Image (cartoon, rainbow, N blue to C red):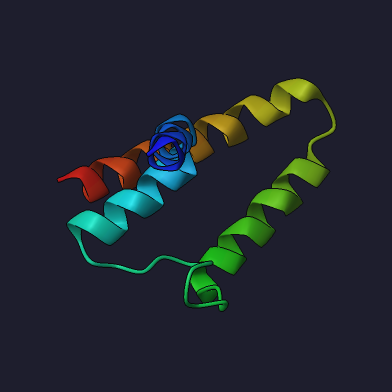
Length: 83
């Protein structure tokens, strides 16, 4: 029983695990890393572009808009999953 509680606590504390759990239980979607080791091209391109933006930032203040964009994308995606 304690292993179930420990697993549940881990899922609740980790936002990514939380999203993966919601996808699996609410939408019957097996997310990346569970059964599929391939990453969609769109995600790879987004990650590449974000990394490039970070590397091109000369001062720390230039990172703030990048971080806000990432947070907005995350929040929007999370809301869609919860609907």
